[in-house]
Image (cartoon, rainbow, N blue to C red; front, side, top):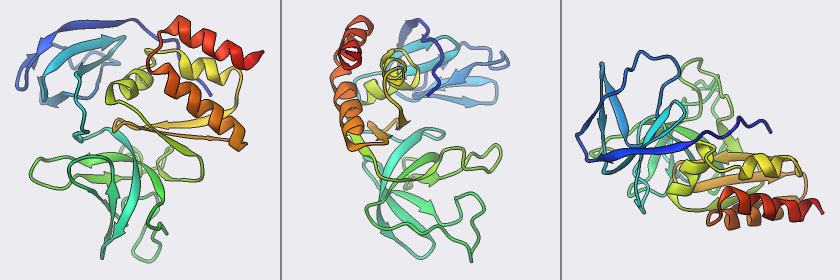
Length: 232
């Protein structure tokens, strides 16, 4: 696993829904995370909380319990049903999401993905509107390639807080990097409070699962001490 060095996290200010954030969207490398939306040259907040910066990444952090989908977010979902042209997917939000059969790399009407109820998928939120069921896609819209999206084979799912998932995605915590130094594993982190884990043995999957679960309440130095116990 490759991980970049975690950057310092700074709480910029308290924001409310509708507040405008003064950021130069033309600056190379700026990434907008959960709670922020861009319309033209303007960036607005979609929820209340702290505006947080980690390197060139900005997002709004709060103690929200239930996942509220936002366009562009990555999620770990479970297939819960099948319609005429789409799958129903449980992503932990108030409403189940829709995943069209054609929202996969190289999918056609004759060449559709074969997913069953209970299967896990890693997807991107393609459309989120309070008046409609969220829509997912299992491809990168920039190149129409899977790029890691799609069916998740085997493994385990860790359910955790939305804030912890934000920490893992922004690499504010070293835990995944530290674990990658002692164990080989795969991880897909969803903004919906679900983290999929896989490794070559059940024992290793269980170890990674338990360490990540404990690390939610630990700081970086405590995470390092926890992982060091595995290396002994």
